[in-house]
Length: 452
Image (cartoon, rainbow, N blue to C red; front, side, top):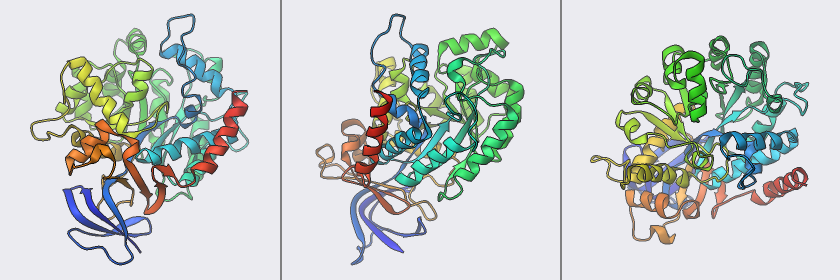
């Protein structure tokens, strides 16, 4: 058993001082407060639970910054998607491994300790299945093992290009499956993660536009009690196309027809009516928000104030991985509300006056639910996934308790992170992954070839 001691730590019950954690087999087996450190304890400053990242397309880290120029047509999500398809057209399994490892290392550096990998790049360059149907899932799992991040693998089902059975586009050929082959892919994915400690599996129908209702009914049970994630209402065109197809909006249709409950995570859910907002909140599903990507793509602003006011569950993710930083995702969520409402501290409440604390609590609880985890923080039985803030960082000087969170989220970000432990093992030191140099070299080699 190893022992970690912190001057202060955020526990599910609140802030506590002089906290000692015993870690055995990767989990917190002992917890004491207001105690002195033992002679062999690893000592630290401010301990926070690691955050869940509920939505990532790891391979897109390799194209971050490559689409920040204007083309001939109006630039929007759909023009960005065309460029993304061109990038993934060249990716080999080795490339996916190298890029995913870099993304996962940056997540650990930035405060995320578990990732929900929304994994849809399944097949070879021509769109044919690999001899090992789970080849790409193996690469994702290998990258998780290499970096140490917790993994919830979400193999994605994709069959059509739009509502009503529109044929798939050439750029989507590497994603496509029918229900039978997808069932085999899910089992191959289960084998891929079998050796990873505390990894788990769900399924992800890509979006209502990419699956038929019949297929959705077939593939959702493949989650076998695990999480079910789906993109929903990210774009106004998607909403309009759905209305033209069935007379209902995407989230409305899902709530009416798909049995949405606490197993589900609706990613983005940007464009909601008031009825959809309260309906989604009441369903127990999690809204998986990716504020940095949603801003980068011009998606729109999720109605977070109304949704949280209706006791909806939310979590954050990094989606396109254009920038990986847990604090900045939370900050961007609040700032978007401020810009639309022309007010400050929109997501705080009279009972929870610290905006940073409200955001963090919501992201921890919703993230655990969305990724199928029983624990939401530093408590007995939980994975010892710990983010240490450096109290000597200038943004945190003179602050304590919730003011530390406000300083980290709104005035600092990843630079205030000192060390990160995952299952009690040190994975980041001085804000850098312990294997950053080697992982970065492999990433550099892959990108130099891909962008040549």
